[in-house]
Length: 97
Image (cartoon, helix red, strand yellow):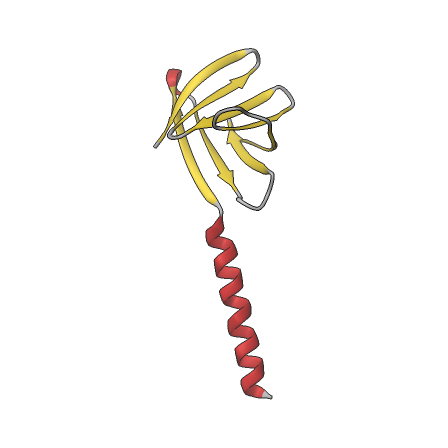
């Protein structure tokens, strides 16, 4: 019984470690000095944006090229190592660092 508990605990911790490694953290630097972080979970249809000290969950939206996340007037459009941040009617080009 003790051996079974150890096996179950080990399997649970390995599953947690696999989940923790699944997300991708990206840091972008943009024209004009703006920076932001984007966390992407492959099994989730959203990304988490942190910009100007605020965090926001952006649902994935339809995009012909790249991956686009959008909510409440904020859009992040990712294409390879480049991204476009659009907010307050302004468009800023960014690159992953």
